[in-house]
Image: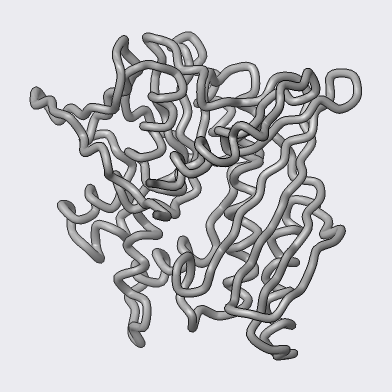
Amino acid sequence: MNEFDLVKNFFEPMCLKNTDVLQGIGDDGAVIKWLGTSSLVMATDTLVAGVHFPHDMAPEAIGYRSGAVNISDIAAMGGLPKYATLALTIPRVDEKWLSQFSNGLRQVFSEFGCSLVGGDTTKGPLTVNLTLIGAMEGPCLRRSGCEQGDVVLVSGTLGDARGALDLLGSNKLSEGGKYLLKRFQKPEARVALGISLVGYANACIDISDGLLADLKHLSDASEKAIIVDIDKLPISDALLEVVGRERAVEYATTGGDDYELAFTVSPSNVDYVMRVAAQHEQRISVIGEVQKGSGVRFKKGQERGELLEASGYRHF
């Protein structure tokens, strides 16, 4: 049983029908009707040492990364992060570690004007659990809105964080290696882009489990097929330098932890999205299209094929 079956079988039935719940279980976040046209968007993430980050990762980087990956979920819904609660489990009280960890978390929260308003602390294996509450006006971005004929786009570059995992523990890094490591330790949540996509993107998701796995979520939720052009994947020079072209493509499609946004828009809205991205100095790439059918398939030149169903990260 994977994580999605687990949630569907045991917890989704608890999401009772309620007119205030605009989006319940099954997306990057939940959306709750608030006042007038305003809504609250909520997301929770748990990061466990040795699973989501190395045991010896710098505490400041753990704090920053923990905040950024959760804020990314808010961005994928088109919301603005406002408040957070932290449930922190630590093996012992280490004041130096806590000072550095809290400094990293403070950095990322300060970038977005997000306030830590509560939480809990317990003793045990190092685990960071954050719940983010964001605000939004109008409709939220969802996974289920893909329409036939949509163009598929992604922000930034893909595979960098996975490339960084090959370098952990290395004492000597090239400039490209340092860039990849920064991409893993300090992912950039695309909040401004997410907000600008509201009303223009038909579907959206943040890339946490890997491009193919996350596009599969869009495909399943929308009951449409997604075709990915492998030759159009945005790959950084740093990743190509460190791992080579073949492995870079593998990491870009299945690596995960990029926390970029993957979204679909109608062809008539592509120019708008490109203009907005330019205003935010944000790289955007067209990588595919939505068609009738199901699943995620690829094309490379004239070659077409089926992508692996299980590609991407799985918790169970």
